[in-house]
Image (tube, rainbow, N blue to C red; front, top):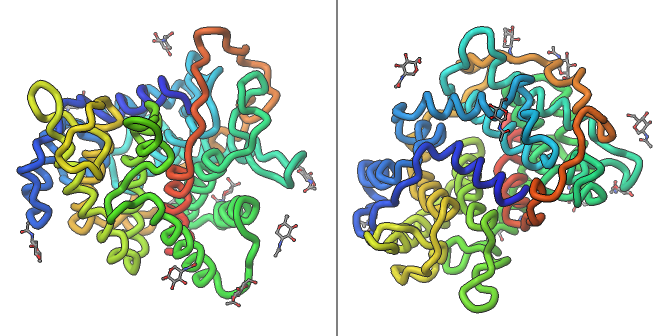
Length: 386
Ligand SMILES: *[C@@H]1O[C@H](CO)[C@@H](O)[C@H](O)[C@H]1NC(C)=O
Ligand SMILES: *[C@@H]1O[C@H](CO)[C@@H](O)[C@H](O)[C@H]1NC(C)=O
Ligand SMILES: *[C@@H]1O[C@H](CO)[C@@H](O)[C@H](O)[C@H]1NC(C)=O
Ligand SMILES: *[C@@H]1O[C@H](CO)[C@@H](O)[C@H](O)[C@H]1NC(C)=O
Ligand SMILES: *[C@@H]1O[C@H](CO)[C@@H](O)[C@H](O)[C@H]1NC(C)=O
Ligand SMILES: *[C@@H]1O[C@H](CO)[C@@H](O)[C@H](O)[C@H]1NC(C)=O
Ligand SMILES: *[C@@H]1O[C@H](CO)[C@@H](O)[C@H](O)[C@H]1NC(C)=O
Ligand SMILES: *[C@@H]1O[C@H](CO)[C@@H](O)[C@H](O)[C@H]1NC(C)=O
Ligand SMILES: *[C@@H]1O[C@H](CO)[C@@H](O)[C@H](O)[C@H]1NC(C)=O
């Protein structure tokens, strides 16, 4: 994942990032207050729609997803793919699954369903599973010429796991359950004792326990960079991580309700603190990243900071949000189990796409454990949840 792609991603899910409302107006005991704070931000994503029921930006969100899906509906659009990594493609596959689970309006007829797009990403990734080294795993990069091809990392495999687990839940197809287990076993653990439920509950418990490293006095912070040096060393990618983590934690409460007490004990104070950080800029309504600093604006601004603040605020609406659907509980998204599986893009050594040169390459930003824990933690419960 690279900064410019993160910005594109942010821009796509963020129809018009304007401003977060000022701190003082957020009352976490009031649903209206949270909705008001979230909608004033202008970052109305499918997630925002899910939380608030506001469909104002459905068309823009749909257009953004379909545009990025590309002519093959696999999130490998021709002119962006030569620098694409498994994590980049994975984030879009996860967005497609969110669209299906939240009953986001189906694409126009003649276009594959959101589930089919998730399946295309899944099948491409499954084709890249590489047992020539380390006994399996996905490489960070898809293509040999990109820096990071020789590296098998948590975010690439976490995204693959996430999509597999969600396809298992949505479609009920055992193949995806098997893959989710295979990916997890490869990555983390190979305990197979106990029942399936005990196994996944233990895994989720372990991930949640480990997540406490990302909280200081129950306020979320990016320990890898926020307190490092003078004023922090967070890069463009890292500024966005609290957005995903907030959303994944909130989603976890939905599918594994026993986690709610622990998770809301983090998300509520974090939302209050984040709103207090939104008093920067000329108009006193720009969000900083140092939520632990209270109302002392940290001087940073950008798409990532806005996304993070919005996400943690609206995550406090999760109790009001409808359940995530599956194919048997009201979901209407059409699938295609074979999507992507005949594509030459599956292969690590495919030759259709030529290497990127010079300016195409941005400095590689390694994702931190925050997002790794998030990707796994947010969805580890999904297989168990079945
Ligand atoms: C919110 O409600 C809780 C109890 O329901 C109460 O302790 C707390 O003071 C309330 N906060 C505000 C800001 O009203
Ligand atoms: C969304 O797009 C469709 C087709 O272009 C149009 O009919 C509809 O009015 C749009 N909805 C909104 C809320 O803009
Ligand atoms: C990328 O491809 C689309 C068509 O698929 C084209 O409209 C767009 O201009 C291209 N963008 C760049 C930067 O080449
Ligand atoms: C590696 O994967 C290939 C292709 O899926 C399979 O034929 C082979 O048996 C696997 N090797 C091991 C050691 O798992
Ligand atoms: C959903 O269920 C219907 C009816 O059994 C089936 O035809 C369809 O393929 C399923 N779709 C998905 C995405 O699993
Ligand atoms: C876990 O997997 C590793 C690598 O495949 C293997 O060496 C180890 O024996 C496994 N441990 C258990 C407890 O199955
Ligand atoms: C499963 O195995 C682990 C590690 O070997 C052990 O700590 C745990 O107690 C076992 N759980 C059950 C339910 O047997
Ligand atoms: C997580 O922490 C709780 C509370 O300390 C503990 O009971 C539980 O065993 C822990 N779970 C794991 C998997 O370590
Ligand atoms: C389940 O998924 C696998 C892998 O994509 C596919 O080959 C198979 O056809 C699917 N089964 C059904 C019943 O859709």
